[in-house]
Image 1 (tube, rainbow, N blue to C red):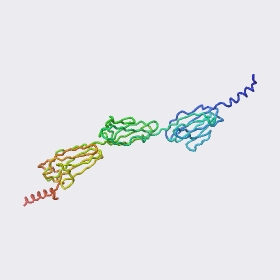
Image 2: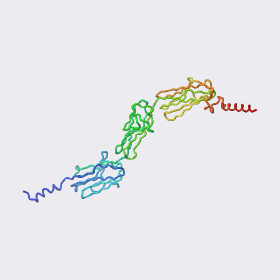
Image 3: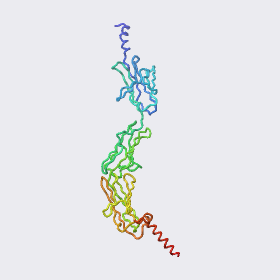
Image 4: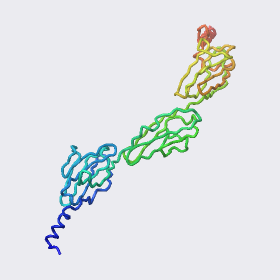
Length: 350
């Protein structure tokens, strides 16, 4: 049997070379921007070995933060505490920013190619940010299928919902649709307008993107008054309401003649928006030959449409237009009528 002192001498180096271990690492941390996080790493048998905090990122090189009880990173938001009693290294991060999110690694360096590590994730709550690969706007032809896409980053992962301007009913039904992709099987002209992609995750006010959906469609013409009566020498307005996109070319036709503004006719157009145009044909100082059927025509690259307005003669004039008509020679018909009445009145007084 070996003497006791020889046995202790033989075992001593074995005790002195026990392998370092990491006995504790903080659990995953979830923090708000501006908050404070404390990451703890407790080690055993590491008195003779370097202990480091690193930030590791697959997209970039590891970032050394501390070595032993000394802070390497020159950032006033970072601080390091060392408790010798428990061999715990505590990394504190104040005023947390989005860029601070990631994996923090506690390392015990045993040799150049040998180290012991433990990781802790720092997750930072971030408000939604709508991604660039989301739909920004779209122009389609009526009847086509449409797919509107919306994606957003942030933590927690944002929820996506869709709405229309003024809470109008969506093509999918209802006023709200939830999901990243809004599909419209066959879009109609009534589906055009502004759609809202809304991303929410409980952090901040959320994010919203306005998506303009333009639907190209052939002209549709409506006539409020398809038959209009007026007396000779009075003016009359013929009106057409046109919906079309792209905006159409508009013409008025009478007896196969394309009308233009002149001493007999005045044509005006007023666009309410890109899809709606109102046009008015004023027939000036109506003559016998100007009674008949007028045609309002509209055409764009998707098609054409027309509507008819009948102008017929009446004995009693429509006085709505009494202030605007005139003789072709420029003398005011209304003024002449007034003079006749005044003359008759004066003659009766004599």
